[in-house]
Length: 134
Image 1 (cartoon, rainbow, N blue to C red):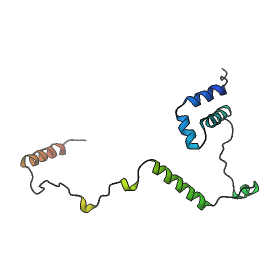
Image 2 (tube, one colour; image 1 turned 180 degrees about the vertical axis):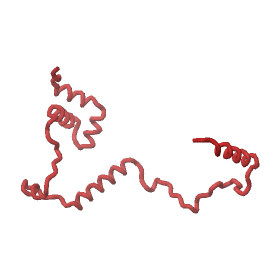
Image 3 (cartoon, helix red, strand yellow; image 1 turned 135 degrees about the vertical axis):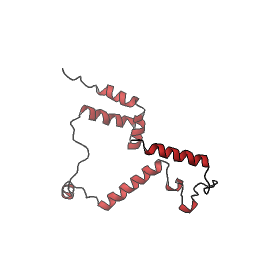
Image 4 (cartoon, rainbow, N blue to C red; image 1 turned 90 degrees about the vertical axis):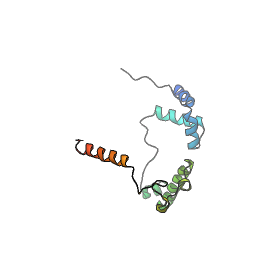
């Protein structure tokens, strides 16, 4: 059984009809048509090597590119992470702070006395469960 031929125009139309295409294209900084063209390219050429290639600084220099300083990469990644955190709407300032001296266990409840009926019920429950197997 042979695999059906892929129609680039049908793929392009399907990608453009997807509501997520606009969001993805905007996040990549391109228009939806460019994004659809890239998707079609990769669908039609599945054996194409990855766009990301790792190589040594010497190989980069031999190809006419200056190697990037690792500190600059770390700075860029930190900034990217900060942007994604801020997009979530959560900031440390929104997290309520709790100090141990602010916690009042049983506030408004007299912890020095116990209702005799509640105590008897608790003792009975513990006695019953003590003999029960798992």
